[in-house]
Length: 281
Image (cartoon, rainbow, N blue to C red):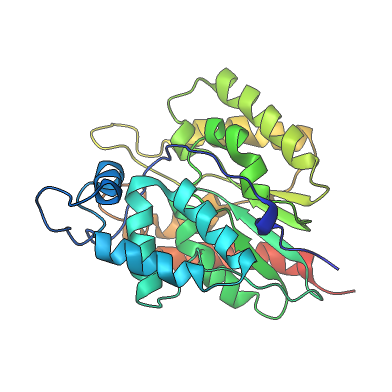
């Protein structure tokens, strides 16, 4: 029997890399907070989270089973000032998101997706594509660079057993030298091998920094990561090749994230990669 493991997770404070989202969070009423709790909330989230919404969210969480409460606490700690207000709004509206709690079917393998906002975007589609074949989870964060992963793997991995960990770091590591990136990847691999899970490395998707003359900043990152993963015998999920033929029409204006068509292409590639690995004997 496999255990979810979130009830035993101890979470600590952290600041997380931001990602793109299609809309702005609703502004809270301006003005002075009326009590210490509102002051603390305003200091942490500014005008992005209304005290009334936060109170309603806390009441919702208090009514959940212990394991789901632990998951929500992990999300509050890990999502940070950008994503958490959106999560509160989504939970109150009962919208399905990548960060919904996943109740495992103990007969199915457990898959963990680790990655930044590119990964977050395709999580739901992958979860639906593998429904009835695998329990598809994602880390309770916008995972950012390798530095963040090395600090937070204990939280992201929880205490349960994983069968497959599908992971990508790259876009948020673009300021590192190849040597720095490779050194961190060696540490990432060392830590993830301790899970006993099958590891899959997702190659970084094409991106173009604003104002840069480099059309695809992922090439050097992928060259470095490919070498490390091949050294350790870790299979590559080539998201770069999957999206490249459509990148001109599938990439958003920011040069990094993808529109709905692009997300569908990436999700299909992830599901295609994982399907043989979760297939029952």
